[in-house]
Length: 347
Ligand code: 5GP
Ligand code: MN
Image (cartoon, rainbow, N blue to C red):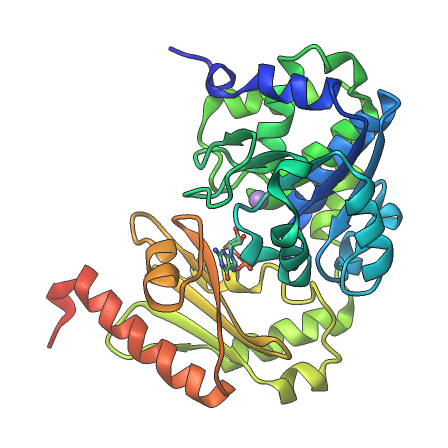
């Protein structure tokens, strides 16, 4: 059996890091535990090496993850555009982490796309299907549980291993736990547990991290969850759960970024539900989050109907239309898609 890391361009990663001095690490919009864990974990390692390194996130990072080490050092492009532009200009190496297309980073993506490609050294580390941007070094494995898994697997098998410390390890562990729901899905590869064991040896407080990830919700957020479940329906003729969250509901519960993280997974607790859709009315469009069980692909659905994407069992897309229209459209589209997959359900 070939070790997974042998498929990674570790020599390329070492060259990118050793031969450059000023780094910008970027992640996707609506940063999650993996996006922040992978960028902040690598930032810690680069800082330990004496390199200059900044983490730029497209929009404000969710406050429920504010305990991740380094959170306060992140720069949100939408809030600090000038500072971020200066950091990008002075950098000689840019990392694209936990995403694979500039379209996933809003205005930050427009800035990155506008740069003269040859003026920077580009590295992508990711675990989404079908990398879009061409980079000097590409390390992408859609079978990995998290970008943090890929980062750690590369670092521990490289000459940079000595720069991993307890702080970096805790960031990388966080991303693996959030992207697998605490090792409950997308985590069947036995080798992942060897990586997790190795991370734990750095000595951070694992239980405290779990508490902060899973038992850190506000009462307001739990009430929003209750209201969301009340809104849940099952799309007629399918086993697909659907939760539409209009602007008025979000306003009623004083919605803040990150509040609905994980909500879309809850309907999958129902025995027969194979797919769950959460639709939210956001200022930049109607955001759809999709999750599925087994071999029903939601990345296909998101990309085919809305130009979105993600992973086989976890995907997303933005619909640019009024919320009511989006509710109608996604219900109709999912019915059609579902019946193609389960033709026996056709009446
Ligand atoms: P979430 O539902 O958590 O926003 O996203 C689930 C997965 O789908 C994540 O891996 C995320 O990166 C991806 N994703 C979400 N929205 C989009 C989108 O609009 N386009 C693409 N390509 N991927 C998305
Ligand atoms: Mn991820």
